[in-house]
Length: 179
Image (cartoon, rainbow, N blue to C red):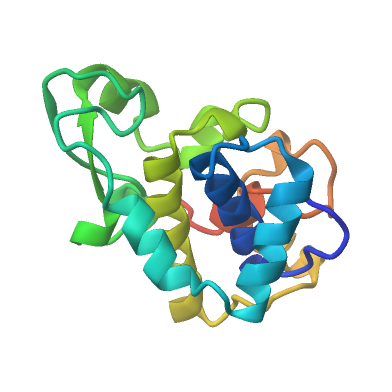
């Protein structure tokens, strides 16, 4: 779970992206101190989240699966499926192998990986997903939502939450329900 100073959707996206930055920097996603430093810098606006997230999200090899990182036959697929309201735009597309596409199905990315394995998400896929979630929450005008019960009321992932009424990565995607 994120630390107490992570209070809103925006904060949680920055916290998770701080982990991606820590991984890209070579410290690993579990390095709490580096993640906290990255989070603090992102909250202050330096470095800018959007340009940095775009750079990492677009650094992947188009011949590797975004999910398992294997060099294999890949095809474009949506990070957030259309049945969950995911837009059919480049920002929501990754290259993935047939096995990962089938296994993921229409699950959301953190839902698919689970809380225990969320730090094992490949950096490129997670950066692209966080950038997409940022934009979608910005459109919904709830980036600064910090009242967790409001988030829980809109979420369909209650059975997966380890602690009710506590901010987790599921709060980022639980509002994107099947349509």
